[in-house]
Image 1: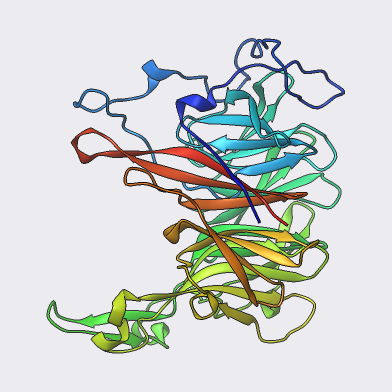
Image 2: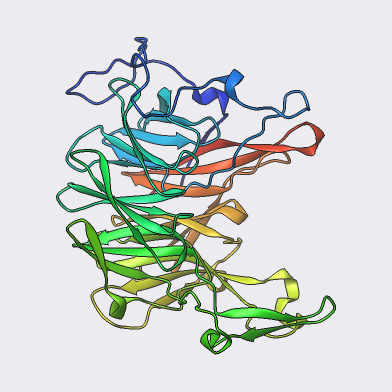
Amino acid sequence: MFRIFIQCGLGLLLAASVALSQTSPPGGGTTAITPGGGVAIGGPLPFGDADIPRDNVEGNYVMQEVDHYDPIAIHGNILVSLNRPSGQIVAFTIQPFERIFSSPVGLGPNSVYEHPFRPWEFWITDTISNCVSVWSPFTLSITHSIQTEGAPQALVFSANGSRAYVTCSSGRSIDIIDTTTYQKINSMPILARDPRGLERIGSKLYMTPLMSGNNTAALGSLTFTEIVSLPDFASIGINPLPDNDLLVYQPSGPTLIPLNSEWVKALGTTLFNVHNRPGTGELWVTNTEALNLFKGEPSFAGGKVVSNRISIVDTTSAGIPTIIDLDAIAVGTGVSQPRGLAFDAARDRVYIACEGSDTVAAISSSGAWVGYWKIPTDANIRAMPQALKIAGDTLIVLGVAPLRRRCCRSSRESQFSTFVVS
């Protein structure tokens, strides 16, 4: 049994008012709050409607599309999330699910994390401004802005909270930040395309690139194409990127030591996200696997060009990764483009945000199919779920909704769905 509550709307997320103290968390209320005075040094400027560029069609916005990676953080009964198109961070109470305030944080907010030893200090990656912003709900302002390499994505803290590690997609690096001085102290080049996912287990860092590939290329003409494997780039004078899907690093002072012998291949072609299953050494990687290794048009019958999967790596052993083929086990629904995961230990479930099919799927920790929820949509709006969090009996789902605009243009807004699970 479940019930659904949906709130959506870019402008509607600009809700108002809550009183804050330095020692207690935000809560619901009607007392107006004044945003922190001034602009933090080096931080993105607050912006409004007049600052957003328009094209030559009245009412149309020109927006930079930024992909969510990890846009939800929870502290007790408070959820904070990134409203990407408006450049806002928004706070909700979970029970009841109500907006309590919002605040501008920059042009391209992507992921948000609370510092493990500094309650209510939130670190936000901004993929347009190429920075990590540190934001405080007590002043509704950015307190520090730390420049990074291009397109920062995921962020994890060291065990003692003294370091923050950030994957930078276009910079092809992992940046290292001193969380005491709020300064970047190093940028480690990564031999991978679009470094994206990042998790820490113990003292080790585990990174997945978005574009892993499968070591193939297309040869032929416009009328005939054959997919061939390219096992030996060196023979034709090219130094290839290795087809490594999970890269492992050991932090050592201001640098990272690659543990090449622990790197893992063959997890998928496009790796959307990596999650550590709590209380285990398992890493769950949501991905699609291209089927272009199968030659000939019949391989793509029915329009299927990729498999939708979860690949599981047990970091405590050197065993072969476990592959869960979601297409093969799904009953009654599509499971296209799996993105975020949420682990529900109380019910032995793993919830999966399936962006391409507007579905939240549920499987057991052993990979057995449990069921699904189809998020309601209509002709003008899609759910496109990308991220999830579980809080007690409430499953919170965040998606982006492309809305039809004039002249067949489209924009996107944030949409929340909450499910009460049992």
